[in-house]
Image (cartoon, rainbow, N blue to C red; front, side, top):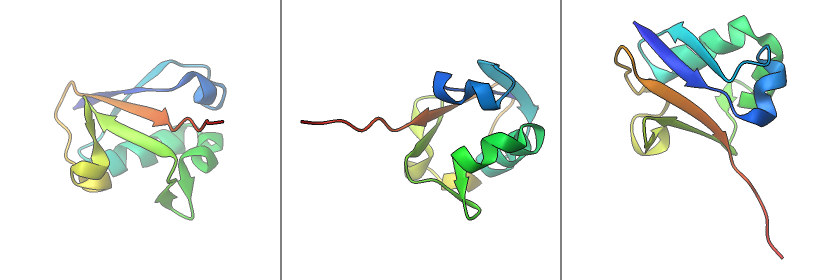
Length: 91
């Protein structure tokens, strides 16, 4: 089951300069851990102490995994998972 992960511009340098990566996984957590196995330097930007960093948003299609089943969210063949770092700003 192939899942496409979109890598944000800010993290592409840690993922072989790829905009997307295709991996096989049945849950979001397995997918992210597989991505980090392939690109170990990406790990510290996604995880902190084994947990997903609070400022890293992960979407399956248009749905934030925080409102689904988190890292246990199941994946279907052909789905797209997006990693979107939170942008802070203000005045």
